[in-house]
Length: 186
Image 1 (cartoon, one colour):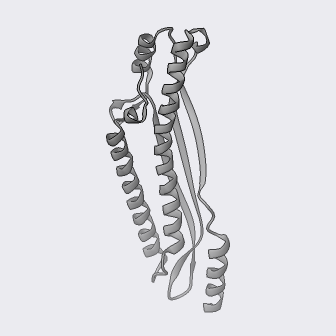
Image 2 (cartoon, one colour):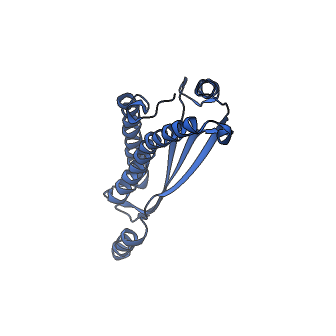
Image 3 (spheres, rainbow, N blue to C red):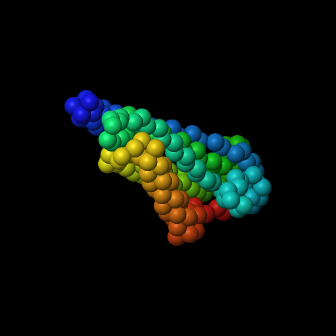
């Protein structure tokens, strides 16, 4: 059994730990208007709510992980593992933009470019969290039992998520939700 476990460990470390699977989706909330003031009013009414506050855009990431165990009578290690992350962006979509003044269109396009830049920072942080969880799973040392290993893996993954959630909050604070990155309209 010891040789089988050693072979499985060698095999699993080479093939069973892939890069996290990342799925990204964009959801648009429609706004319309022919002036900057009307667009701002529409965004203020329609923009997404997150934790009791409303922002022009938001990015949510959710990470799930799954793994199998390899065990013998003395120890347990993680065998196959898969980390999957879903990233969802919610952004405004100006539905009648082509009817507006070209100067306003240009101002909007510049704003949206900077808003996307800010939201991409949240997504990058989420991807880093998924990669960190995958690396943690890959590098967990064998322990005496699979239930104990399961507890350790889940606790560490949750700690990684909490750390990256704190980074997202600090990022929003430092950038004033993208304002310092140019995401200001009008």
